Length: 238
Image (cartoon, rainbow, N blue to C red; front, side):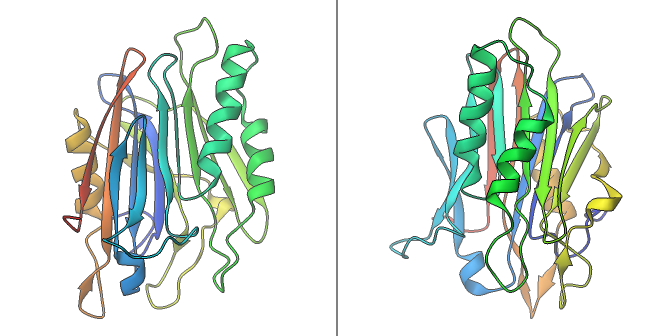
């Protein structure tokens, strides 16, 4: 099986559920340039940080909080950039004020975040898994702003099914922004642990560019009750 969003998805967010019906997510980072590949995922408190190798300088477009979660309420946010914190705080507020956590809030934030200020107009994919206050049925949300429009979806996954969006699609030599008119890509996955989920996404995304592996890292997470268990694979040892 190959990555459904093509040989160069850039950064990619999947949300869904395991075959046993547990909320889950996966996140992938790939890069064509050496600078883009010189990163690694590092756990820190209730987050996963995409940071530089060694003493490389901080770059706000490449270094960010990729995942943030709250094991008290089951909330998790996964994105490719600086929008993570804003989305997390919004849906945490919605939970504690017993407000419905619908997609309109995510779309509003992503309208403001917009696409990245680079030559490719790189979109910013974002995913949320949360529970309405006092309820056990999770809400699954995806959003991505492109230079055409911002799309947001509420996903209702079936067991063993994941839905995802990526920054890019198409030819690895000439990537273009994700096609929001097609909606999220669907993937079947039998992974039952965070480690298996991260490895699944990492394995289906194997690709080279100018003789080098484009994969940087993959992150997988599964929720048990309200608590998230998360694993990651890094290209570099750090």
